[in-house]
Length: 311
Image (cartoon, rainbow, N blue to C red; front, side, top):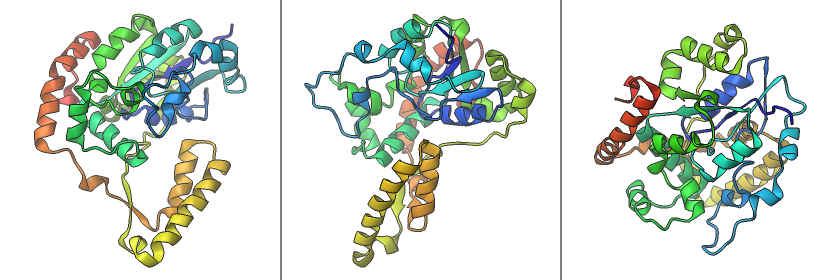
């Protein structure tokens, strides 16, 4: 059995995993799988845009996946191979699979202020069309104990930010020495130190890593049409243009970044981002800040230092 991939960026969603993917993808010693979120270790049915039927039985994952098929994906990449799947830390069913399939692979987990992460994930799901409720309504929804697997994966924003709970389960299957925790805010503020530690963890040249430019990837947007594109005369025309260009984009562009770039080129003149106008209200932010305090404290005890940027 070969030792590929050498590492996986395993989450968390909306915590900067795409930023780290793009950073490491620039390193000449690293070969990243070009699909940014390759969800091999999670049931494929769960990634539908619409909810599954409540009684739908998921396919047997073990019957349709193999070590050989997975590792073959990395055969043509550079010496230090990696991939990203921002749901692996959160999705506990994947942890045993990772342990069985990848006994030597290292894992990098990027964590972000949990309040900001929850808000970012919420608006990202609104943009995708999977979320239709207000943020306050989603908090009430999470208090239910009968969420479907589909809801748990895509629409459970608060519990995802209790990072220590996910890490405890992850460490039952993956030894700590094969896991590197990166705090997004520290990566931004202490770039040279943080990237040097990541390179050391992966056994790649840290000098080259420091010379890579830090940039914020996968910025959250909530695109809405500009006023002129909503008029009766132009609405149907732009509806057709959306469908027509999307058909072309999904056929010619393989990666998410390339597809997003083409969408901006084709449609940017009649769309604008409404994200800055929509923010979490102060009452909800205070509620979540207090809720996360004990979980953050336990995380800090695990890491051995205080995460100053989260206060």
